[in-house]
Image (cartoon, helix red, strand yellow):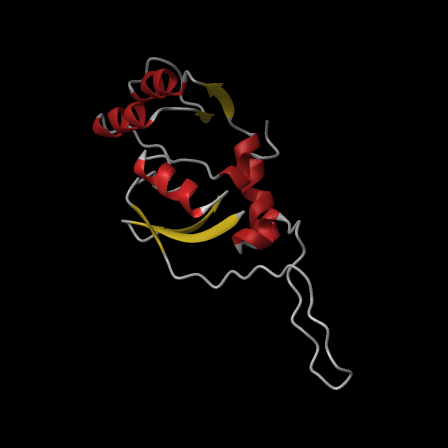
Length: 152
């Protein structure tokens, strides 16, 4: 597993986890690597300081202690660098939305054009559907996976 530091054309920074460098390149070429904040597909790798340590090297009794790698199963909050309290509050906001699934574009339009009462919704939309909603002036934002992991 490779962790890349990424940034979109709008300057939003985020991490991406990939099976290999080739997997990242292939997903990027197909437009699958997108910013979790603004959904931009123009994403570039940033210099990264992630280091993988397979096993500690033997040391002499007088050598400084080796740096330890972070635990393999860091909580999402630590990986994202966001305070756990904020993650909990944001997850609560997401839990209080209606998951309309693939009907998201249709439901968002109904709410925007006041065909139904306004309510908080979430769901899925393809890149083309998302662009069509933006073109119509319908405001929405992608929800980062770390906020939806406990809401399904």
